[in-house]
Image 1 (cartoon, rainbow, N blue to C red):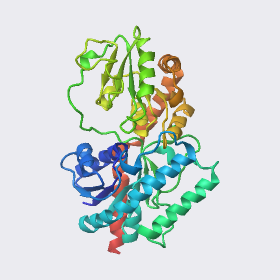
Image 2 (cartoon, one colour):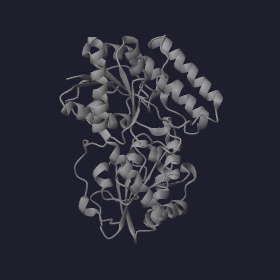
Image 3 (cartoon, helix red, strand yellow):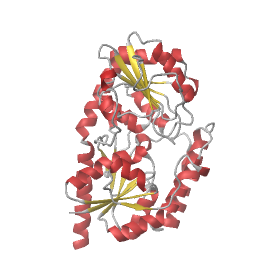
Image 4 (cartoon, rainbow, N blue to C red):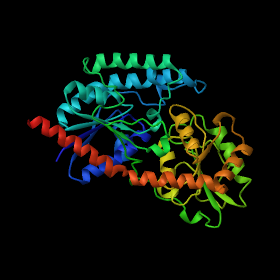
Length: 403
């Protein structure tokens, strides 16, 4: 039996994939614990029985970490690093160190955005693996911005000096021991980064807690069903886009129905809730996404990596409207793979969205490409494959310690 300590940022999309791997390891009899600045979020996503060590750190969407919506491109990247990722790493570091010393893991599993996990483990001489919950880092997205690349190398070097091993040389985003990439080259594309320590395991799809009460009998098998969701972190900017989606979908109610996720109530009384008689559009603050994806024919989303991968896991084509962070890169991967159509989030119109939805529903090439990625995802192994790679790392670490 080995011990695995998962270090994650307070972000749903980063905890969910790790939760599937953690559950698999626990089922195999291993000790599992977590470090997060939002212990209650880990408990909600990984189960109330999860052992969570608290730590300090900013929570996205509050305080100075709120990013102005007009920031784009390199400026947005700079904001992300300076206002969230670097403060998160420095504030998490003491808690991570305390958790490692108390829990005594054989392996630390550090999310790619929880840089304190790998750097503190490196400093303490504990083997660590990277949990890469987005495929955006596996292409050279900065190739056209060399100054940005140099700047990023500099701030990572400085961060290592403060909280890691100053003599270390590994990129804090990529463990030299093991990198778990929750995607496959079929989605990332022909330029996908490879290397001895990189393992493409595909999406980590596992059961997760979901509120009861979804009206499954509302779904009409005689019509195509479209799911519209902007994830959990974009409620502040989604009103206009959701309104355009609603208009596009209502104008096609003779041949399709739609489920729109609207956690902030941006659409007001424009649509139907679970108890409404409206048979065309269902608007809810949240949905059981994984089981619903088994029943839908297309997804309109923000190109969040989890939503994209969960849709493609089910062979469902997409219309992607990236908003920020890694989403433009992921949207490009979807379009380049032929599994969906990319539209501009800020300028999308009902007419344009309707045409894109019609295309992914009725032009067979999108479904063929989605099925190809579905096959690759499932062959990659998911959470069980990731758990096996971590077990091998732990065994190797134990063997070296015994020598």
